[in-house]
Length: 332
Image: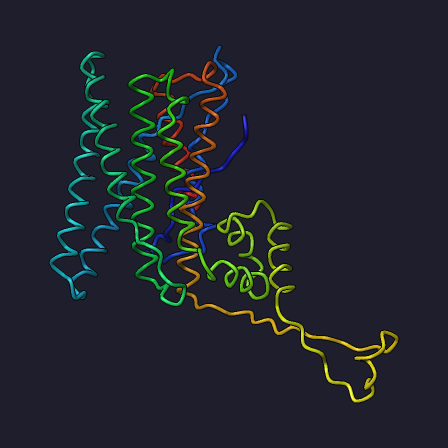
């Protein structure tokens, strides 16, 4: 099984955006993994996702409140308000259905309720996918775009958590073999990558490489490069394609006619520097992409170890998850 860390959060406690690599929210998704259970005949224990879902639920509700307050200052106030409220209603119904299914005790009655959770999650997930902001030119990246992307991406991954949780309750033995979950992860990654198409890709890579090296790995990952060497090769190819210009040297008059005379050429390389608001969008995009990758790793681990996973949601497993979440709060 591949060891992986996950990340589902994207905001500081005071509401400000990243960089998120050191945020407590980043640590939340590290709990979305299979836990070793050496004292049990089965080697791994499926995590009780209830506490995590509740934490992200509170984050999403806060996001809705912020969106609705901001919409009052927008031109298309009524239209935007109606859309956000519709989304909020769909999410609230889904969250309530999940709580309802969790509370039913009769096993036969539970199955239909968990099936409804899956259906409602898929409907909301596709709605979110289709309404995620289309490609925005790099020059127009701003805090408002970062906010909309963050809320949409957070709800998308939360919907995936609902499906994973409900599928495990409905029929745990087939969860790891469900291809739709990986499909949804890939669709989210495609939506993120679409923001970096065209010249945005090479410009962001140049900016990161020369002006923000600490963020370079985020950019080349979003641009689909396998490693830094691959990313460096892309930049080298870009530089090679720049037209070389001969450096004027009055002492090398014959250099154009003789290879024995030393001369020099230069290439004009423009390395843009982007604003903090543009980098906030990049951070949010990377975090959404990273969440999707970590959920893929989690699903892959389930598939590889399907016969060694204990799916029973014991009080101990919930207490263990709540304890870890509380530790994150204390550390902050």
